[in-house]
Length: 195
Image (cartoon, rainbow, N blue to C red; front, side, top):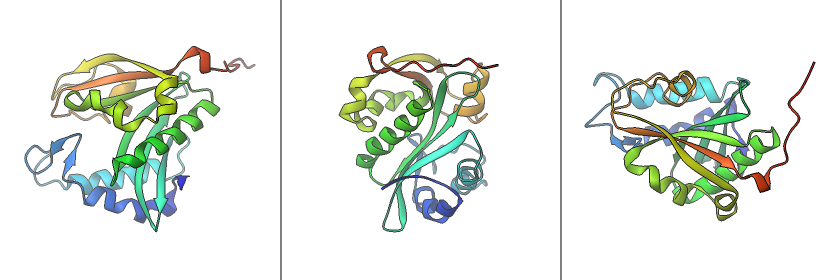
């Protein structure tokens, strides 16, 4: 069952972090995102709980929850500055579960008038994302284009992606940011005026 995650799901999410040996395709034993003394996965888990499971207005996560554990989740940030969202994290014990979770995240954001999103990938694996993450239904409805590249160990020059997608971290691999958008024929344009 796909659920909006909250603080009650914190313990259920632990195995998705502590059973990982890679992050963004990088072996954590060989090329760490931080000092060798730091417990990267512990920090990542704590940050996930503090950000996505703590009832913050703009940070949310949906997950596949079955048999007392979270088998897959997608976390995202809903922008107040533009009708867009940022896909920030994907974790899974089984990649086949990702499309149904992504469908729910897209449904949530479409219902709130957000028809495009940005995501960041290790360039080495960026082409495979759509194949494994999108359902046939949403693959037809959504288009995409590559927005920009950030070379390994450099700071993204754009404020929102730097803060939200990169979490103000110098990533040790080349990355690419992609814009994915709902095609016009599937949109019902929302009213965005107020007094």
